[in-house]
Every structure is written in C-alpha cells, then in structure tokens.
Length: 478
Length: 99
Ligand SMILES: Cc1cc2nc3c(=O)[nH]c(=O)nc-3n(C[C@H](O)[C@H](O)[C@H](O)COP(=O)(O)OP(=O)(O)OC[C@H]3O[C@@H](n4cnc5c(N)ncnc54)[C@H](O)[C@@H]3O)c2cc1C
Image (cartoon, rainbow over all chains, first blue to last red; front, side, top):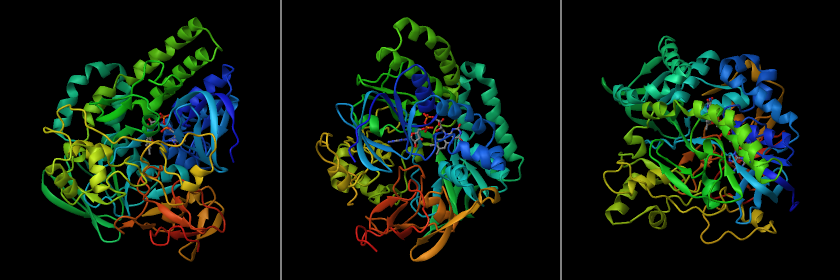
C-alpha cells in the first residue's frame, strides 16, 4: 500500500502538455513517471484516442482531424520508455515534494526529484437557475461521453459561447444526433470588442477561418441557431425538461431533456494552489493562474507547470510548453547543459508564441457575459455541493461579510466535496467591491490539501506524508 | 437523452443499479453506463436532498456520486464499470452502510 517509487521526474496529467513533456524527458535519459486520472493517455482533447481511432472509425471521423492529429503524440509517448500510471489521481503535493496518489491499488506516496503539473483545464462553471437538475450538463461532459463511450447527445439544447460549443454541435451533427437548438450568448458587441485584437492574430488566419467556417457550417445545417441569448434558465422537477431564455425577439422557452452549458475554460489549478505555488489573477481570461516563467518554473523550486493548467492556450501550445518544461527539467537534473537547453528551446519557444498569438482575439470574442460571472437571479444555486443560493450570499454581503473564507464559515459555501471548484470564482466576485468587473482581483478560498477529496481511511493508510495542516474541507465520510 | 452509437455497441457486460440489471460496454465509466441506459438521476444531494446526476464528467463537480455495494461513495464519472457490479443511488442517509 505504501510502495514508494523514486523517479527523477513525475508528470501529473496525460494531456498534450504532459505527454509531450514525459516523452522528451524520457528520450533525454531521465527516469519519468506520468500519472493520469484517465484510463488511457490523451487528456481532455484526445480522450480515448487510441481505441477510437482503432475501433470506431466513424466516430473518429466525426470528431475531426484535430482529434485524430493527437495520435502521434500518444504513440511517441508509448515508445518513449516513460513510466505510466493510468487511473491515478494525485490529491496532494506535500511540502517536501511527496505525492499522495489514489489509484487502482489504493492510496500511496510517490517521490520524485522534480514535478511537472499538467492537469489541464476545466470548463468554467455556468451558474444559472436550475443548473443542478439532472440533465443539465456541460458541453465538455457530453463530448467526453462521445469520445469515451460512443454516446451521442440526442436533441440537446446547447447554450453558451466559445469554440467548443460550435465544435461539439458540428460533431453531434456528424454522428447523426443534431442538437435541437444552439443558443449563443455572443452578440454584436463581442465582435466589436474583438476587432482591435485582429491585427495581432493575422498570422493565425487559418485558425480564425476555421472558427468562422464552423459558425457558417452550423447555420447552414438546419439546426436552429439563436445569437445574443441571455438569462438562460433550466426548468424541471426531478430532471430538466425545458430551457427559458431572452433574445432580441423577447422571452422564449424550448422543451429540452438535455441542456448543455459552456462558457469557456479555466485552469485546473487546485493542486498547485494547495501546494503553495504563487497565483496571479488573469483579467483577460477572468481566472486565476499559477505564476511561472517561460520554462514553466513556479515559485516552488521543485514544481513546474505546463499547458492549460497554467493559463488557457489550447492543445498545440500545451504540447510546446510541455517540451520547454521538460528541457528545463533535463537541465536541472543534470542530463543536459545550459547551452543545449537554450539551443533546443528556440524553435519550441517560437512555436509556442505562434500558437498563443490568436488568444487575445479569442478571449475578447468569447468573454463570458457578466451575468455568468456574477449571476443575478436570487434563486440561482451558487455552491452546488451545499445548495447555497445567490439570495443567501447577497444577505451575507449585506451583513458585511468581507470575503469568501468568511462566507464559507457562515453559509458552508465551498465546504462540500468539490472544495469550491465550482463556486469559488463566483463567490469571490459576489463578495468583492462594486463595480464588480472593473479589473479588480477577486478574492478566493484558501485551499488546503487534499486537493481531491479522499476518505479518512485513505489518509490514515498513508505513512510518510505530513498531516494536512489546519481546516480540511471536502472529506468524504468513507 | 444519450444514445449509444452502433459502432460503439461492443460486447456488453451486466451490472446492477438500484436492484435492476443493466448492460454496459466494457471500458465505460459507471456514469456513461447509467446514462446509456436512460438513467439521468444518480442520487440526491447531501445538503438539500435535491436530485442530482452527472454534470462535468471530469471528476470536478461530485454530482455523479453513487454508492458501491460495500457502502463506499464513488464518483461515477471516474469509476470504471465492471461485470457484476452492484451500485445504488447516492443517498446521504444510507451512505457508508453496506447493502
Ligand atoms: C471536457 C473538455 C473537452 C475539451 N475538448 C476539446 C476539443 O475537443 N478540442 C480542443 O481543441 N480543445 C478541447 N478542450 C480544451 C483542451 O483541454 C486543451 O486545449 C488541451 O487538452 C490542454 O492540454 P493539457 O495537456 O494542458 O491538459 P488536458 O488535456 O486537460 O490534460 C490534463 C490531464 O490531467 C488529468 N488530471 C487532472 N487532474 C489530475 C490529478 N489531480 N491527478 C491526476 N491526473 C489529473 C486529466 O484527467 C487529464 O487527463 C477541452 C477541454 C475540456 C475541459
């Protein structure tokens, strides 16, 4: 149970960033172990890619070339000699770098000389009335089911904004399960706001053309597309059965047994925050990110980051960032010299810059609307785990509760098993000063280990790991 | 809601949810297996008893909780289904106690 593996580099996360990093480091002579929560390598974008490409060609074709393009990354990783531990969740990085892992074999502690955290992104929570009803899911959740299990989301209503909305709508059409309607929150104002960023993105015209192409393709597919949608709300009793919204034409309501929400991605940085890596607020992406230098080095000497968990940049950027971090790891572990590191990094850094160039345009175009960042309907559940509604938080604010950690004590928001992942940004904004979105840094919960809820029994089974300090939230009873 | 595409309808295994037998494809998460059988509500929320089902499918939201035969709580989206598995809806009142 307490087997201890010692490797030079442990990589947490098997998406493009982690795979590219582990491959380069292993080929460079380091002993590497990659730990990933999924059953097979690929991360969010390339989930289940080996099996889908091998046995489900029609689904692979519907997922598209960008999906199939990830196969080479996974194959190179398989060839590289890096160790691989699937279905392994890292729930804590201790102060001395020890990793607490829960996997098939139970809980264990692993040790590595250096860590690379590449835990990717998660979808931004979209707190609207009724979003806790069964049948209200995220767009990424439905896409995950398509990739992992070949499940098509029939007759779904898709609501929100961002490339994943368009991509998934087209993928659903391609597998013969078109959505009932696509409700886009972006409108004319977003296009105007995005215009100034156009010149910088001109080098990435192919990517922009792809986005416009998707929208055109969707609009000509026969699926109803509504733009400028606001005030989305799910209705239903024991499951969702419809969705209401406001458009230019007034208030509308559509029947729906499945409502899929999406408003972009945010870094999956819980583990890094709990490990004490310094964070900074990113106003353009409206999220926290881990402070790091161009090698991915964080404020903690033994921990580097790469990929979307350090700020949303997309899969191609994630892979380049992973390679850069791996080069730095090889240097710090003594496998290569400084000049070799710097020389090999040049083309990678150039590629990374190229992949990141269109980001400001995308961020301006697909910025989540204010009502998503700061909900206004009083009955909206903000903290899903504890069922805390906006009205309760508004009341706390009126009483002068100064910040999220205090709100937690009064209302239990953020105290449930998700440990605030789905409510912390919203609560931070609701309790920060007016005007709410004027570039201020919202406050956030203090995060303490474990970064994944574990049972008391699992913690008790671990030797050699320092006790988590202070208040611990998110413990499951058993 | 969700429909299994013909191409993915591979050799099936049997598991139980709430006392009833269902079929799943080896490699499914419990969440995918339940959704493929038309089950959208997996249990009830511990704080307010409201009906819940999977929301994020990547292990973040904890709304897909179910109870395993021995009473342990599991995230259905991260737990692979296995032949003969017996699963119950998550219910704060019975969490922790075996079947
Ligand atoms: C649900 C979803 C679907 C997406 N689909 C697409 C798409 O179709 N096309 C597209 O261009 N972009 C998509 N994206 C964006 C995409 O995630 C990124 O562009 C890209 O995958 C980032 O690569 P990465 O290596 O940084 O992280 P990821 O690919 O997210 O990989 C991170 C990996 O770390 C694992 N992990 C996380 N926490 C832990 C932990 N504590 N312990 C162990 N393992 C952990 C995750 O399971 C995952 O496998 C999607 C994002 C999400 C959230």
